[in-house]
Image (cartoon, rainbow, N blue to C red; front, side, top):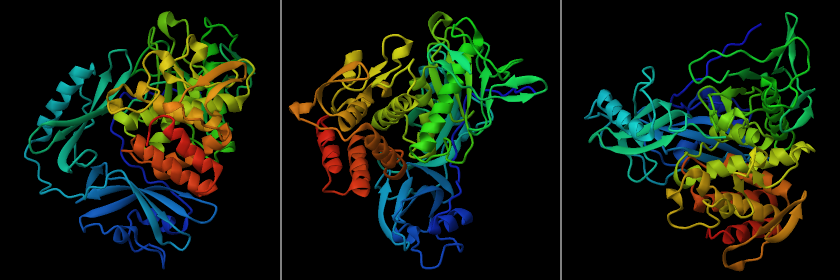
Length: 518
């Protein structure tokens, strides 16, 4: 038994239609389109309720059903059959099927003068190649031809091409650079990355349980209890190679020392298991996509690669060994962080640029931290520091500016920052929401969280804060959500969960005020 997958470098993400058991949503998902004949009797047609034009169709991606029967259905949109980037929305229906509210990525009406392009796909490809050169990406991936789309994420909708370029970024991270080109003028409209960067004895977690399967007299690092998650040995190589699953003659793995290749694999396998258990047992989500299937992990990627990342294309987490191959990036919070990028991609799909990109990164920090607290591992106690086991913490949630680059508070140019630094505002909000402002010590770590204007915030507790952010992410956020939209999304989640007169609702308001998001 030998597993030899390939780490895919790049590829555009196409909307996936997910199955659901919810009433009207079930019919819609079965039919594939809103308003199709399979719609349940008595249910209000979302397309008609939204007054969409005859050229627009809604393509359902998945649903969330509340205890009171409210159904939240997430849709992609097409215009004359073309995908609308920025056209995604969430329709909220009561248990009778009546549309109560709609959360849109953009409010602009979707309309373009023509769907006939003036420039050719090869011309769009050349524009994408120029952009990739600026970003340090490699060569065009030939099996990913430019696709014609309607670009609606920023400003007036226009006919465009979306091209995906693969290769390597400056630091050796694989590139999945999406370049959007005006199909009339050839002008580049936007670009964004799809790659999100992030009994055995592990280096960071100590002696932990490791599930495996036995085949042909050998044990393989595959977790049959958690969707089949498997950890592979990248052998310090990069994309395009075939890699084996970790195997052993005994069901004992690693020795706690970096010099043994299995040690990093133990940490990655354990991190994936704890993340799976957290999402299932705390948030009721079975797997990244909610379908019971696990992603895989690759460790020892590249030579001296000082990063970790999530890739939708290979549906996997990939971990480097750090500078000098001496510090694998397989700590527990990093594992939870990378897997959460997959959850975000399966739900709100927050675009990995500007303020939405910062919210994407913060979501991974929030749930990476949540996984660390959930695991209750004595070797890696829960804290509000990101990647502290790797050396100096990468980020500080109580006061993000302690890293020298992240923002504590919202400002007009926040979206111009790298997404890892614009995430600071949401990380700070979450800390205030969970723990409150001021000085305190948690699990032996001292914190002192300031606020905008000296506002006092009393936290609602980490557990409630986690569930509130998760509901906001899965029900009220879209690809284009910015910080103002995140405030609205979390207030709606607090309203649904606790009511508008509750302490929790008022604390959400106060915590956003405390980071200058009005």
